[in-house]
Image 1 (cartoon, chains in turn orange, blue):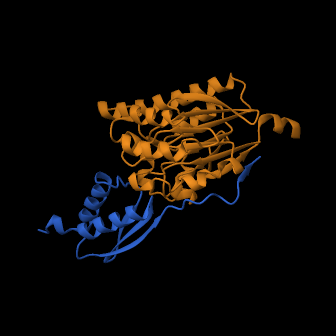
Image 2 (cartoon, each protein chain N blue to C red):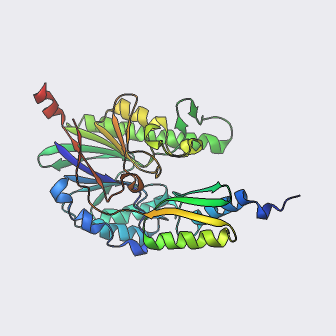
Image 3 (cartoon, rainbow over the protein chains, first blue to last red):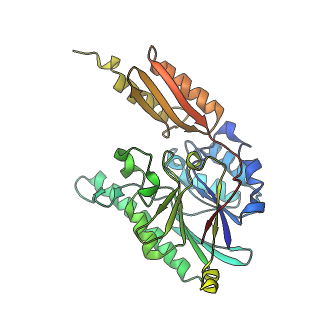
Length: 248
Length: 85
């Protein structure tokens, strides 16, 4: 069993230092790794990224993150990524990493993702260049997630997790205004997760949404935006493939 | 003709623009007109953010009744885990 702690949308600023650390210091008692589902800062400035870095530096569990749209606002996502990496955070963008958690190989594939909407109510790659670019970018993120999950399938992982900022399903947006769903996620991410394969999908972004959802292919989805889970992080106890085989 | 600057809907839109553009970078709260009152709901990262948000709302919506249900994010550890068999 893998104990996955996750939170997104912590939106740290100068005055936030130390708010989450007491809870993060309890992680070794209840979790094997911590996932950060993007929007770690408010404006994506290096100063805000340093607050996040100090908040998670030296934790006794590995930390894996994706960036969110807020972390791009200052047009320095590479710098934000570098500051987090310097604090030993693995930052994924259309990439995968494999962690050894208490002897179990856990794969995490991540991308920020993007919007576009859900089947029957989604943007199409048609018309003005900006509109086509919007959908192509979303598809680019989703394709990268699928490829990262496929890479993990070949790396003998006992559990695979998809980590995004934008939502792969509409289920976890319940509570948000319907009109803004296309800005909150895209079915392309869910299709990538179902094609590449995962045991759990974790995202943030939808502050007014709902925690629980599922892709059309049956992969469980959890919205861990801090305003949704109402705590410093949530923990999901994920049974591995070997345990499942043992139970059959 | 009505003065657009006095229209409550546009003033709410301008408040939302300010909340996103200024120091809060806040896109996660809801601002809605309920009769004669503007209701603000959502969760913000700190008490300081809530104070700034409400100060901005009072500036932008001066003379309008503003009701706040904005709460500060909770930073406690969970007391249980969800089991995913």
